[in-house]
Length: 367
Image (tube, rainbow, N blue to C red; front, top):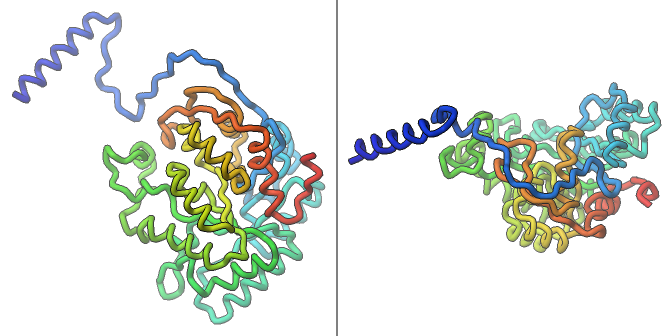
């Protein structure tokens, strides 16, 4: 029966092909199937944000030697008033970045977060020396916060070969010092949950994992997704006097009910929208309701500084456009819709919330 059914299907395809002006391509694969939509709807392309904004999540590793006039020119074109470089590195490297910023006179436009080294945590004076570095970076290097990379808490190991958990009590003095200094901690933990799931037809990230197989993880590599995320949440709760910015909406942009529970449970946790705008854009009504409710806890972030990608963020947040694509199909093969957020909510996400929790920013620039 199976062979007969297959034969009938092939005959049907041949008949259809004969009726077409061009031969029917039956060899196309999923990776290349990406037809343009025939839907004709109003389009409101947004090249520049409606209000001046702060990008809380950017990386400029070469900031000490960059042509900052060129960087600020690109920022001006999209109405980015302040960019936060999360890759300040600390110590002399941070000082060199500060010198270059001062050389160009952009102290009010470009700010840095510092970084710390966890892999030497087994050294007896690690906590004391790391706290000293934080104090130095804030006082001398003008660091406005601390960035923790996903490797710190996931792949980094101590001298004994043990994974360094982000809620390790030995790190506690660092989180407490950030609270004392009044600087936020922006932390990236884990990755999308689907990276830990089987790479099969039920995995929504199938295409991404096919094209970038190095992102695929085993169920316990180096621990389960649930374990890594839980360690992060425990750390937040253990340090209520420190402000934490959970990068990428904590990988819960696809489960806003759960993220709502966490925001209620952890009052010192904020979130930023870097690299998850496609998740918000495919649930416009629910996402708008969520962002309106938690308008005081969400910040604008992008993650990678690519000016050509920012307009998609503006379009999702500002317009009510329908059925438009994300710029990386392997991240999001679905179409998106604009949320049409109110001016009040937009201004809080674009800059007011960052002004509230990042010290030393000039609020007069947004008046």
